[in-house]
Image 1: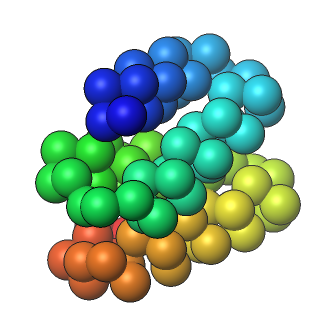
Image 2: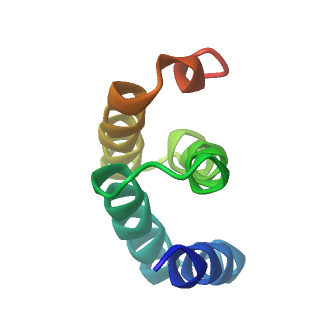
Length: 81
């Protein structure tokens, strides 16, 4: 499952369209709900920047929601944001 999430997150990041952001968000939420894998958590934390940098307030909200999910697992990910 870790390999599939890693691949899906990397491919979704490359699209640059809204559907790619939707897949990225769902990957982040899934990564936060399974047994923690440090590599996936770091990749998810880096992906959150795309949401927070968007001009669309709805996407910023998704970024904040994803950040809350990942910070509940490890608070160190909040430092860069």
